[in-house]
Length: 182
Image 1 (cartoon, rainbow, N blue to C red):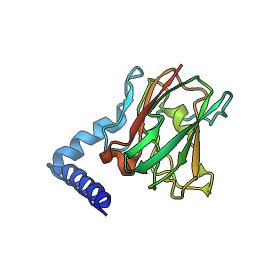
Image 2: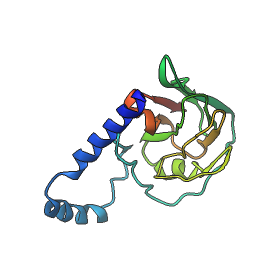
Image 3: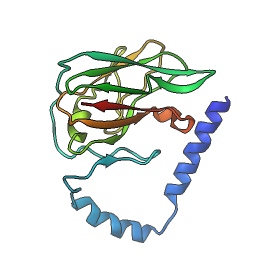
Image 4: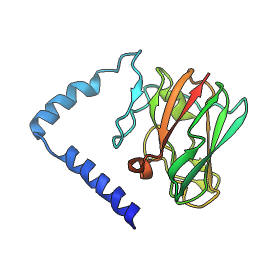
C-alpha cells in the first residue's frame, strides 16, 4: 500500500507540473517544434516521468543473431531493481526481461545512442511470453503482470553505446539499469 501511495504521489506531482503554464504560449511554441526535425547527431534522452522520444524513421524489426541474456525484474525487501543492474552485450544479442516478483514491471528506454531510436523501438515487440500486449509509447515495453512472464528485446541493428532503461511503475523507487552494447 505504501509503495502504491508513493507511485500515486509521484504521478500526481508529475501531472500537476505539466498542467500549469500559459496555454497560448504552449500552442505557439509547439507548432514550430513539431515541424522541426531533431539534429541527426542528437542522442535520444527522456526525462524520467516524460514519454520517450518518438522514433525518427521507420525500421523493421531484426531478430537476435547472438546470445540472449536474462535480466530479472525484482521487488523485495532489498528494493526494486533489475539484476544485473549493468551488463555488456554485443550488437545482435538480446535481453530477456523476466518478472520475478512484485510486478507489474516493464522496460522503458530513456537514453539511447544516436540513430538507434527507430531500430530499438522496432525491435521491441508488442508481445510477451503470455501473449499479445499493448505498447503504450515508443521505446516502452508492455507491462509484465505475472511472475515468470517475460519480454525479449533484440539489439540487432542498433549502434554501440550505453542504453539506460527503467521500470516505469517503479522509477520513483529507483528501478533503473543500463546495458552497454559493443
